[in-house]
Amino acid sequence: MTPTETLKHEHEVILMVLDAAQREAETIRTAAKVDAERIRKFLDFFRNFADRCHHAKEENHLFRRMVERGFSADAGPIAVMLAEHDQGRAHLRAVEAALPAASGGESSAIAEVSGHLGEYADLLRQHIDKENTVLYVMADQILTATDQAELSSAFEKVEAEEMGEGTHERFHQLAHELAGQ
Image (tube, rainbow, N blue to C red; front, side, top):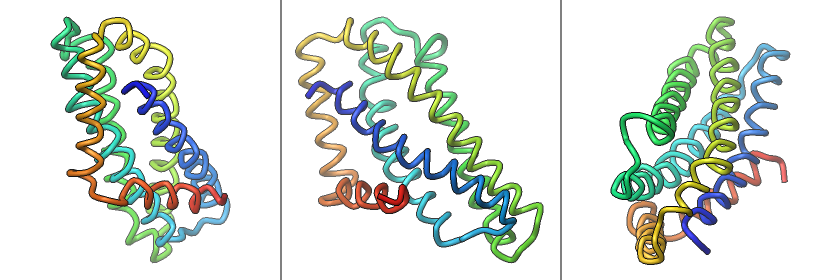
């Protein structure tokens, strides 16, 4: 599997959880209450699998290699992807910040949790589409066979050393739990 195929596979798992997050945001909006434990599980998945694992592979490895091959980190597609990663992190921080008050029934905090969770899901869904249909296509066109092999090795290292043994599988199980599958 090439590095971009690995990332696309991770996107499939993330999209499954984004769909569940969108449903959860709508449930919160209509019920006007928050299941804090479930929201914490979403935060755990998005922060650790989507950001600490997946986005780290992109930011620390794929994007850097693309910059080495001539892409700009300050403008163009990589800059857009990095900015969107930061926007996503801001939405997750806002969900976490509002969660205690939302758990206590505060209506404005409930709206914050629902709104930011839904906006995060919308943002990442569009972001993933751009990566899958534009950025990764560009990457596959410019990366050499050596680049591909080195990136695959770097991705495995992220899994083993930064995430830890069994962590990837734990997040796949959590994804299925959150998606109701």
